[in-house]
Length: 200
Image (spheres, rainbow, N blue to C red):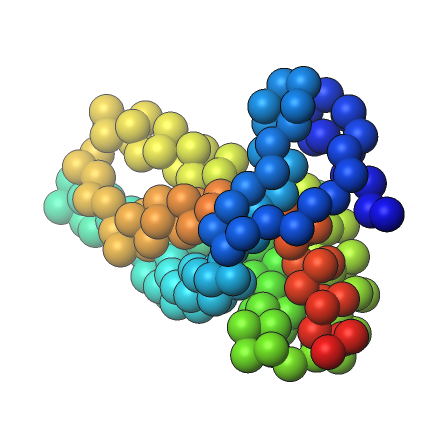
């Protein structure tokens, strides 16, 4: 017998088989407990690949270009990290580097390593460890905070110079949405799929 706790009210339910595309809901608060959606893994794999492409775009193009008294200045996220370091704000530059670059990229790459074999119905080498690591680093991935900071900076700079949003800014916007969609993938779904593939 498998028991599942409601994520909203903690009421325990006995797991029941579902029809394809069906979902189980809490009898107390009507929250979704789990779903049976065979295409969910493949859909999230497509989101992961799109997120990696956007990550490359976001970090290889300028976030903004400023026209200040006829002189054009461009800035990438890497430039911002180095400027913080050069200004004596090394701890802050390390935090920005980790939360805006390292952890989001690591999270997305590990998801790719996990979802690619699962989408093909193959066992994942070290799949349980991968899933645990993803769960540990995900709270440190703060792409949404970074994007909001960028928007605030662009609005403030617009008062002193002509600011032209770059490809990277739009890429960060799309990447933030994709990472939010990927965060909606329930770990329970991945655990169950891992167990199902391993026992096949």
